[in-house]
Structure formats: structure tokens, C-alpha cells
Amino acid sequence: VIPPPVIHIESYSEDSISFSLKMTTNIKVSGYVVNIYWTFDTHRQEKRTLVIEGEKSMQKVANLTAHTPYEISAWAKTELGDSPLSFVHVVTSGTRPVSPSLKAKAINQTAVECSWTGPRNVVYGIFYATSFLELYRSPHNSTTSAHN
Image: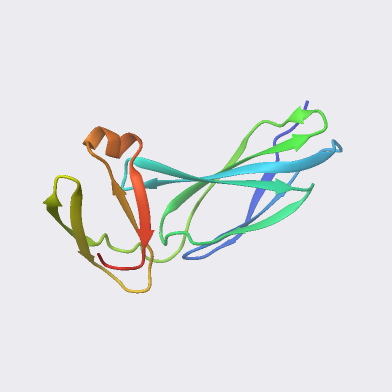
């Protein structure tokens, strides 16, 4: 039987999480697949996937949001097949940024002009769709550090 990998949170801050991965077995490990999940705006789950080579691994995931719950799952790729999943949960430190105040104005049938207020020197994500259902299931998105 292949055991799940051990995920150990080494440290975390407002915008990053450092963790280590290891196996408690003599089975040869070729690498790991790690998923980091978080919830956007209480209903949209986001995910980042890392494919890591090697038997032992120390990882740092950056560009995260302060005071946000994250779930890290991982499985090992071994010479005998894939291991079961293991999970850990961590909440980044600090204060979660306030949501920006959005203003949107239709320009024509195919364009909307958007502007918002919020802190400078951050990256904003803009999610858009032609219906609320599409916005929930599979929105288009773009990122910018501008305010319009």
C-alpha cells in the first residue's frame, strides 16, 4: 500500500505559504502534484496546480491574499503508481483587503467601461461574462494594476 505524502506547513505570512512534502515509505518517489485551493467571493473556488519533481520537496507559494483560508492537497507519483491524497488547511496572516468599489457603464452593445477605487500597487482581477450563470461557472478574466 502506498501511503499519502506528509504535507508540513513550515511558515506562512500575509502573501505566502511555505511547506514541505515527504513520504514515510521506501517506495521511490518521482515527484508530487500539489493543488492549492481558495474561495473567491464566497462562491467561486480558485485553484493553482504545482507539478514538483523529486523525492523531498520544500515549496513556497507566493502572491496569495492576506487572511484567506487555503487548502493544500498533494499526492505522490511513485514507481508503483500514484499515492492517495493528503490535505492541510492554513489561513494566511494579516488583514484581508477590502473589496474595491466598482462602477460600470455600458459604452455600446459590446463594451463596458469599468473603474474602481482601491489601494495602489496591487493586482486586481476582473471577472466578466454575459450572464450570471456564466459568471459563476466559467467567467472570462483579466488582471491589471490599473484602476480602469
